[in-house]
Image 1 (cartoon, rainbow, N blue to C red):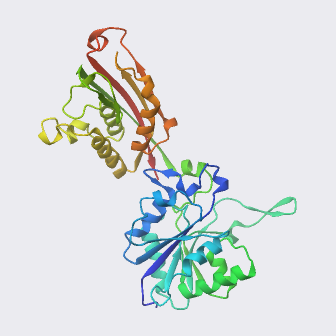
Image 2: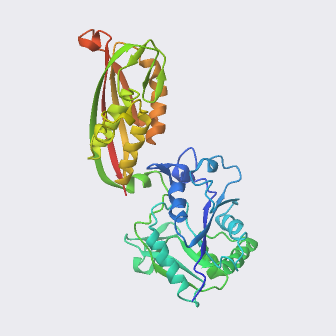
Length: 385
């Protein structure tokens, strides 16, 4: 038995993700409220057995320092290399095997790893001295064929397995194995191959089918349940002479003011109710009653943050938003693009998934007289795996 149960985790994240087809490396694409990399890294930060998380990134990486985990005391950033083996070696060589005798390598693009699955693999590794490493594997479920020259030849799928991460090894053994790979110029796709090439014994363990890997952009869609929710919100407020209003988190200079108990951001009010409604939750009056003096002048950004937090607890994420703002004044169209950008930031969405339209009542009613404003909001949610 390996008596020291502590482990370091290495996440190679220096790849460009060319097959993903985005304008930035795939690990920085947004999945829910976090990037793929944030989700993959954050899995380990609250596990006591994990002492360090070392992330290998491209030396010209311009995104890593904006990640939510960057200041965490367990995090270390190192330069990656031109191959996966070099990136992992650059990370593992900074470890002292006597202090951290075990190291796990996990793909940056496997954000759905379950902590219990990782801990089970770690227990299996520590339970057997005769193994220098363990790795998860799952059975093939599709028919497969082998390329032979210009033909595709049927093979028995029962003879093949898919290999996943995290893979866990003796620190010193992995250092030696990767050095051998690099010195020989071999190009291997995972660390298990490096260990076996160096003569070490590694053991296959049962993997987890929910531990999916993101390779292509459509993998993000494939990893979501077919579960969409729709909600709508409506809000009305009076207008009085003033020095400006706030709509969609954006300050608009004008000679008007919105009459409200909070900051009067009617766009965020209607939007929050649409989001909460789609999630099967209560309206904003339930969470922020106007009878509570503490809510006087409350920033509507807090309301949206509360709504997003409640949705996150149900594993729900906004999919698209459609807003209609009805008023005679001020003119909304000059502010639409800035408002969409602000909402995209608040909701962790793309601006292309947000529609903001403005209209008037053609002079009819209190709104037509310039004394009021209304917002109609529709929001759809998607449930993440």
